[in-house]
Length: 90
Image (cartoon, rainbow, N blue to C red; front, side):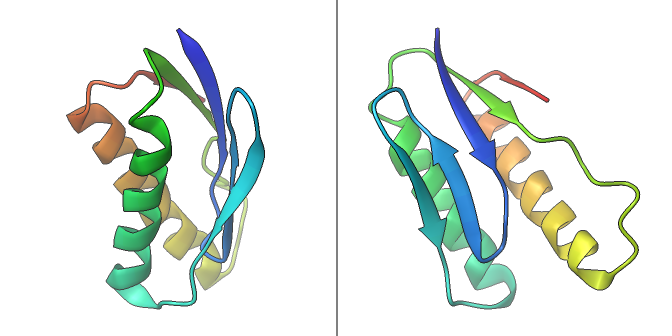
């Protein structure tokens, strides 16, 4: 298994791959941004043999609307990983 780290953010999702650390930036809004980030995460994961994703858990203590939107991104990514049978841990 090859570990891959994700630090989910609507403006700059961090991704730590075996050979490089990079980020995914999106200027889109709403569902289009969620789709773009999901697709780019999956593009990075596709060439990796047996990835396991380490993902930051939800921020339940946050009190602003941004926390809800980031939670949506977390759900979108977790569903995408599930559909691809890619294991993840928080």
